[in-house]
Length: 310
Image (cartoon, rainbow, N blue to C red; front, side, top):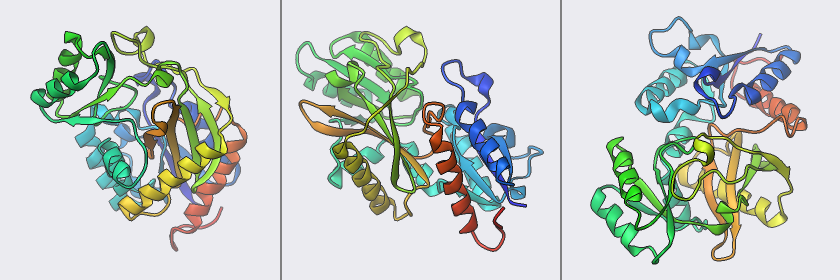
């Protein structure tokens, strides 16, 4: 019997979202199809643990959200996982996607992104802040991070902006400095979801950052709502995935979430291409559970002689 692991995070770690909200429906749907499916907490299968990753025919990364707190450990786990079995999305894609400097590659390939300065030291942060328009606000965040950890929206001349940058640099990450996008602050960001490169649904999650600080209310808490994706937004997401495959030389991802916003100043811009741990909000699009299940099983059947159809 085929055994598939849905890779997630210990739910006790998070208060703002439940990583099992997406994983549990997939595990249940796979089991209904005759597959031996289990949720796999990645840090519970670290090197030296009792869990044998070779027992799985396929591991599907879904919500390893604490990877940014343990990047070296996560990379080591990926290496162990890929030498034990097949992993989707592909570990090489995950490594590329973990560092948000991939946005610069996509921009060079013709994808519009929010203007971003990547700062490796305090001097370059100071220069980026000095270049901001008088009285304007900027977003600062690390190049490696999830859940808006160490992200803030500050006036460019606020000493707190530089202090946040110092905190980020101390973690070993570069600092991304971006101008405030009014449409983002108004909660107009959309997440456009894909399976095997095809559109499935779209979600708006509301604004997350508060001016003068970090997360609104002090915790990461989305307010997701199902929304319609325009033809232009769906086409944009498709172009992003095409650019990703060109940049990495890897196949179309099993799944993806393209975060975008339509702006008055820049038009449609990419915020992030989430290619290994995006919340799919399956509770708002229950019909996608079956599509996701079928996509996973189709990839499993393509995996070689070790994998058998359920």
